[in-house]
Image (cartoon, rainbow, N blue to C red; front, side, top):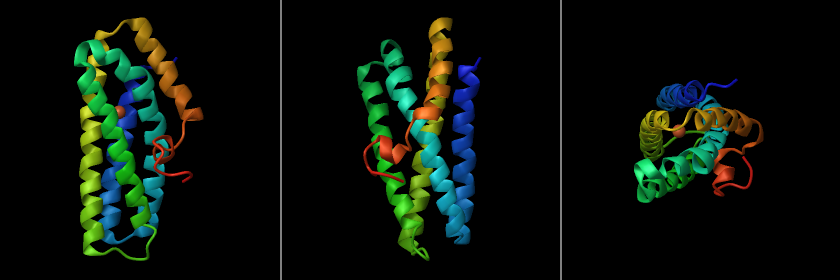
Length: 159
Ligand SMILES: [Fe+2]
């Protein structure tokens, strides 16, 4: 059976590793690697954020309040829009200084999401064991059916 806390944290670790590698690829001007990393990030973040929006965050409203949960969901929209732009930028043959500045900002913001989100995993420890067991099943199931983040949030038709 899936351990929700391990699955959830491993997703955030994947985001952390991918973004650290992306920063290196951007600084080295290795756009082929940057493309692969951004695709992997898009594919992993979509099912994860869909899980949060549909299952985790609504369960945290009694603890966090409706406003904070709305803000977390709206952060996903911003993350998807920045990811879409980052993917467009690395399709080019070379990066300008402005491109690199944007990509560095994108990496910082996405890392901030992963770090903030890790805290909602702590809050989930206050929920019932049954609910947490369901979360484990839901986060794993969405990896098979979920869409890339840019598609899920409607900023790209396909990846
Ligand atoms: Fe998350």
